[in-house]
Image (tube, rainbow, N blue to C red; front, top):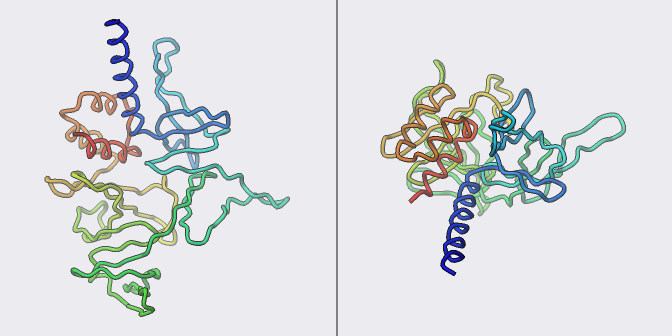
Length: 276
């Protein structure tokens, strides 16, 4: 009886640990309803794959398996789920234009679509928050139509932060990512908590400044905590993460084994924020 009791405790501990780790990973659900946990990464041009750790690499010498997302019905990336939507054919061309739904924000990863109810836009000016609908900034000004129908033309320099199409941007004085980068910019807030995570995208082609490709090049991150605002690049990613994970041997080992890379920083910061 005592043996059974201890066996149950050990089993629950293993399940709890596995579940906890899976919270900080992506996944893919196959058309057979099997769930594969791993981490989504870019492989080549416009090719997204799910990397999952091989639990027995000594048998075949393979450290990670890669899944090219064929035969996948649903994926989760950074806490959001995306469902597969087949490309549209008109007999000649293939279109990757996915269905739009009024009142929803559409985000895509290849042919996987996430639909999220659209929240009201807002602008924060000094200590005031004005809700309404934002038009794209024109000539250094942002136009907001309030719920009452009033239109406000607000100078960008007067804005502390705003929410547009469900994405929150905060005005920050930061370290430049390149020579001609702005010292003060709006950073996209990805995670709140003791370690805030921001994304900053630099597009070489100014016409693509609003590109929604989440895996596009020119992405940088900033982490804000008691040490201030720290710039995270590809080249300093591991060193900065080692500093943050210095007291966590399990996650530090995963980082050193390249289970988590630059593209997966969301999961590391999310883990640190939720860790007791």
